[in-house]
Image 1 (cartoon, one colour):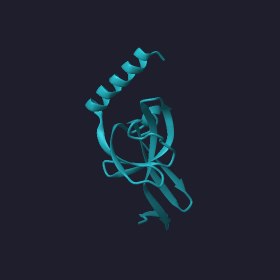
Image 2: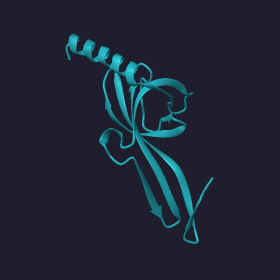
Image 3: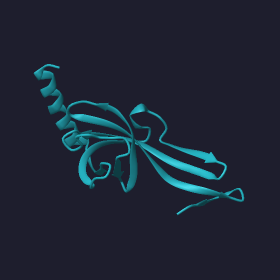
Image 4: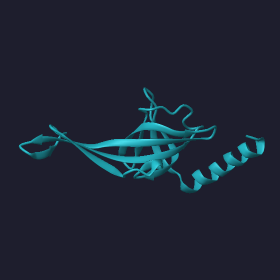
Length: 127
């Protein structure tokens, strides 16, 4: 990249995050939570996949929700799989780092919203 490209990319990102960003709580593995600004896409994430899924097993089912977040690398210098982000009171886990450059990291997120145990062919929420 040329200096112009890098500078333009950085300034465009600053404008986008100031317009579309929202406060989230980011926790790197083993670290303390920090409030940062991210551009969040609820639902299918950056890959356009499903907004949620339910997987049924012999002993119960798992309900998951998906999202993606673009974070500023100055806030999260080394994003990693298994870091967590709290968005609208839901705790998401970083499943994949979709894209990363000098200024931005785009993260694919998922959460285990609820786990239900099977009991006599009915499902009961497990605490």
